[in-house]
Length: 219
Length: 135
Image (tube, rainbow over all chains, first blue to last red; front, side, top):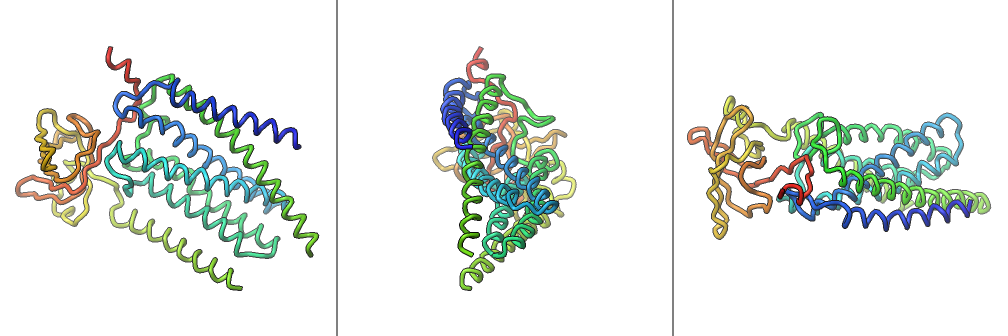
């Protein structure tokens, strides 16, 4: 296990360095927005990882409700926490990009609003876990929220197609599309961020398992 | 259980924040923006403050005074409906002719003039390389 973790760590570190090269040097400068558009690679990658992390929480929550295996509760919790980190990155890089591109840090557009709600839902998820002390109950309550809360993820994803919004649709169906080199750079960034996610998840799950052991000994 | 109380209070704040966002964001103006012809068809419906209108900046209509932060242009939408827009404030870098913009403010149907207090530039959803465009 330790060996696998170390190799994933190495891959993640190397991956991020390669991703930086692709985002800042390999990808061409965008014609209208200029250099600031390069934030796109991290903004979109973070969003995808946040969605993926919440999806893992969703699946593990279902498993917890079916077989009551608390190991999956650890994964669900860990993934939600990491998802919140990446969702925070999305909510920070977004305004940094919006200010020069749109002229305003924030606007109550459907995409932005639903993303902020998503962030609040999973902050609520983490808080619910702190609130309930009995492990069995905690796992069940959290699993319920982990399943219901996930509803917002497809809403955020599809919001730019469902409603009128200022947020551009570049990659989805009906979107504008992008230069092939930009797409390559984005794919490299998403792969690197995925490795980073896996590395963080393994560490965090490990902490959760150890915490459970300590609690058993304490009792 | 002081910790529990704090968690409950903060939890309630977050819950009410979510509800507030949902209610204020979706109930009052279910649509993020309307287009010029929709505004002109039914101007009285939209005389409430805080309407958002989207459209293109008509080529050759821009009157810009950077020093006094004053901007005037004609907005045209897909159907060809036009209105005058007056804006006082910082002009976004991205603002130029023939881009799509979203303005927030008040509409005067008698003069067909929209007084904007916010000007947002809509970015292209197609990303092109700088070098290729110069060719």
